[in-house]
Image 1: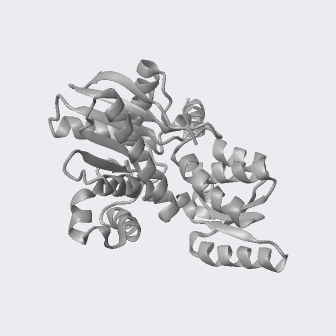
Image 2: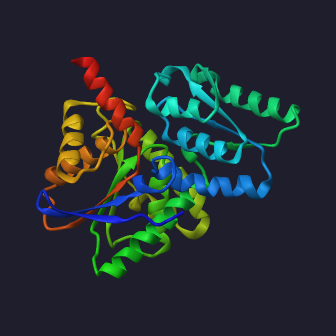
Length: 311
């Protein structure tokens, strides 16, 4: 997987803003899920697996990427989707186009449905590989440990020190990987890594991130060090997953008009809005700020479609 460019966006709210364009990773509209999936599919390829089972909503960037990587290998993909978040989206259309089989059930039945699907495939003589929703687990965390190393390498090459890193924090492994990368580099006090929750409130959301960090780090960091390094803000959720607001819509418009970069209302637009408000609320000035664009480009077009329908 290629490294992603860090784009200089210039002055922003009295700070200098940069954006790491993980949305430009060269596979199926990119995004953090592509960065993670590359590592999952290394295991699929090396282990001789012939089918993949995963979990995600109709808006899932993760399921889009996984379905595409399965199609590229001509192996079957089986998506278990929660009934409560199954509205059609451009992502779900792409998932269908890639030939994935989607089973939609109430969220309370997801676990048992996954187990049943895995067993069904085994009984049919298949060798299925399971990927947790959102690419959760140490492999997903490792992907963003490596991303943190990329950021440090860019800083060395450019002679720039980043004071803040902001991004959308969802299932938690993107957030966990960045914090783990920082701790492994011994840079806990060098910058603030701030995850903007796009769905879960505290303490549930933060605890999920903490659990991922602790699982990855093992005895390489104390609970106290991990707690101190983990900033998870739930102030800007706009009501929860896939919820939006006029502020978020305005942010999406602003970033596209001024920088030519598409964000979406579910993930990156919400996180960028949270970053903007946080910088203003805290009176932060004169700092170098990095926003990691974690992808979701198909959802940008869902936002446009909703606007059209509302007119």
